[in-house]
Length: 115
Image (tube, rainbow, N blue to C red; front, side):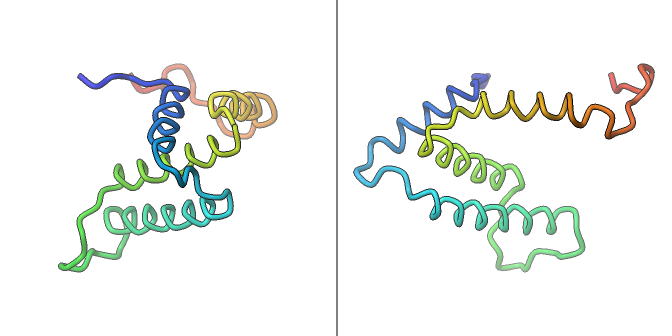
C-alpha cells in the first residue's frame, strides 16, 4: 500500500532530492519556462486520450498521470525555491473560493451528490 503524503512532506522530499546536487534549484524564470513546457506535454497527452488528435505510431507512450506528476514536481520546485509553503497557498486559495466565489456556481441538491 502506498503511503499518503502531506503537501509539506512532498515539498520536503523534493527539497531533499534537489539538495543533493551542487546546482540546486533552477532560477524562478527557468522553472516558469519548465512549467510551460510540462503543461504543453500534459495538454498533448490529454488531446491524445480525449481529443481528436491520435498519437503517431513512433511517439513515446506517456500518460496523463505521468505528465501531471512532472507538472507537480516543477510546481513544488518553484515553491521551494521561493520559500512558499504550498499548504498555506492551498488554504488561501480555498478560502478565496469559499468566500468570493461561494455563489458563482450552481450547487447540487443534497440528493445529487455521488455516493
